[in-house]
Length: 156
Image 1 (cartoon, rainbow, N blue to C red):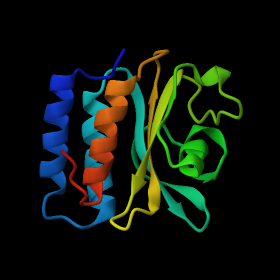
Image 2: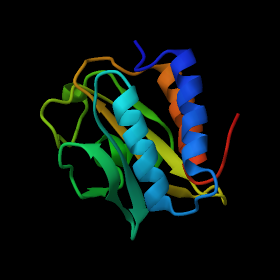
Image 3: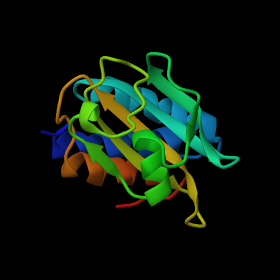
């Protein structure tokens, strides 16, 4: 199951590109894109950014319930995505060793790394769902494209 159809994702990608067009401020861009995705993806109860800074992930703009502020690299789904620099899809967060439960209503998660123009890890986009197995390869494909757009790295 995907949180959106391919057609919906194609529109979301265009909307994300339009939201960040001409804007270089990362806070404004990640805030707008987080809001867009939170309101358009199915069954999502958290959509937000953690920025890689000072050797850890620090909470940035998001939509959803209050969230954990600091996440160590390698800890939880976000920390694993940052450490491996690869998208993590977790069908059941309760089975994920070391899962950090910021919202007890979350049952599945996808975390997508964000890279800067030099190809270095900048942070991660974190999406939680109340539904088990809410995310799949289609989500990964399009959320990685959208993550690239946020910092001005448009990908087709």
